[in-house]
Length: 310
Image (cartoon, rainbow, N blue to C red; front, side, top):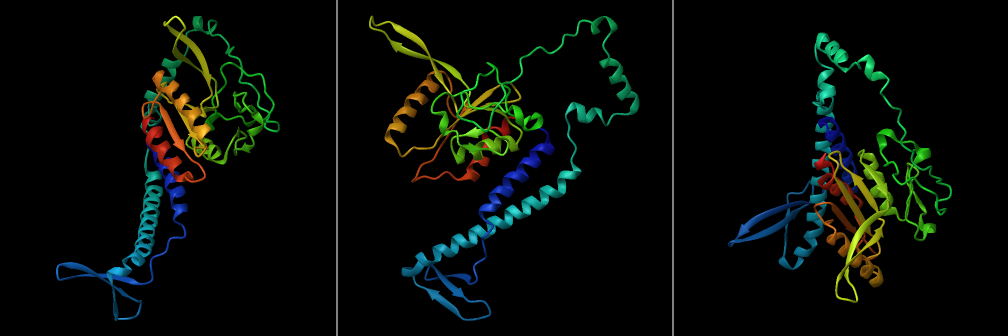
């Protein structure tokens, strides 16, 4: 990934994290600490007053909210400063990939490259037209309909997106639950999946949603011999890296349900047996009623597991 794209992505990430702290305010009262008899003592001074009020240890719990308020305030200041600096230096940077560097070459070298890139006349007739089958057409208005799909659907990518041709889920299971629509017309099953899809889209990652994946399942037959069967899974997201590697992302959104946990333990076992495991090539995120998923964590996951490998 180019340095400019990395800066652009970092600005997006830090702005999203900053949204979490937009209501953060510096505490009005001033906290003062002193050492008395070898122990810390804390005092509060109100603005405009010189009087300092000692806080007894029995009330230290009250200071905890003051600590978190100040911490959130400092975090927001750091993020705002980072964003200002990144936005300031972004226009000063230049990409160092071969195409960008070639554009800065003297005219003679640019002309030489044009000549070197020209096809000899005898090769022109050998060029074949692109006969690859186009990706299946999506029908966002009816996400529950099971469409016939190309066996090699085109990954979703912001750079070359055709909204009329967004490859939808290939998973035949309970398609009526594909009720949440992303800003680029992909239908998913939950708001958190929507957040993940839109974040992947915003950073320019190429991915498929609920694409068919065949894995090998090993078991023991009646005669005691090992039997190998093929089992089909539909990972939430299949992400294609520039180096040809593939990362799978499973978002487990109903973890509070025992039956859901049991089913997913079986799925994860199948992943692991096929060499798919975190942090190598599998991302696992979890949420439920008692453990809501923080959307800012999506960006930290993408930055650490995906963008770092561009």
